[in-house]
Image (cartoon, rainbow, N blue to C red; front, side, top):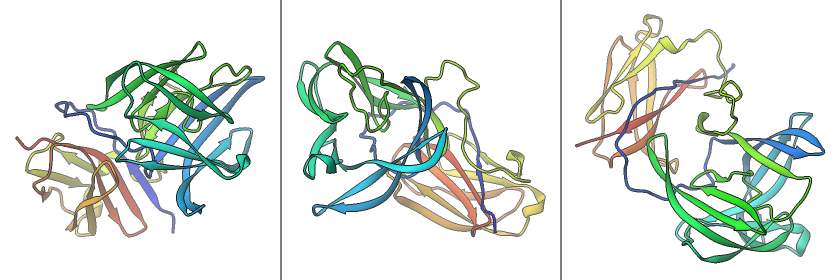
Length: 291
C-alpha cells in the first residue's frame, strides 16, 4: 500500500531561544547542490545507513546526480555532539579519520580541516548567530587560501555536507541552493524562490485542508482538526525533539476538533507527526512556548 506523506507548511513567529547545538547527522535531511565546473550539475545529498569502520560507527553520505540517478556513497561521517565535531573516514588514504567540521571554534582560531582529499588550515574570521525558522544557529565564517567559507549549525558547509572547505581548487564550485530538515525547506540560497520546493513528499488525494493544527505556537494544548472523512478513525500523535528523540506519543480518535494536552517540556521547536499505520503520515513543525 502506498504511503502518503503530507507536510503542512505553517508560518508563525516563535520567540528566540538560546543557541543550542544542532546535530549534522539526523534523519530527514536533504541538501540540493548546484555544482559549477565543466558545465553545471545538479546533485542531491542525503544520509544513508550506518556502517562500522575500524571499530567506529559512521553514517553514509549518499549523492544522486540529476543526469545519472544511480545513488552512490560519497563518504562516511560520524559526529561527536559533546565536542561539536564531525569526522570523515577516507578509505583511500589508508583507512584514516580526519576532522571535517568543528562547530566549537572561536574567532581567530586556526584549525586543520579535511576536504577534497587534503588537510587544510583554515582561519576562523567570525562566529555569530543566524536565525533559521525562529531558531538561533551558529554561523561560522572563515578564509581558506583566499576562499571564503561558511558553516551553519545543523546544515554544515554552504558547499555541501562533504565539502567543508574548497581551498584553491579550480573547476569545482558547489553551492547548496536548497536544504531540508524533516522534509521542510530550511535554507534557500537559490536566488529564485521557485527553485526550492517548500516541502518534500508525496501527495495524492489528501489535501492540506484535511488536517489542521492550531494554535502554533502552542503552550498547553494543541487542537487537531480532521476532515469529516477521517471521523472516528484511529491515529497516533508523536512529538520529537530536534535530535529525533520521542518525547510524547499518544493514540487519538479523529474528530472535527481533537485536543492534545502537551507535556511539560522546554520551550523550542519540535516535530509533530500524525500517522495512521503505513497509510498516512503528516509532519509539521510545532513551536512550544510554555510561559
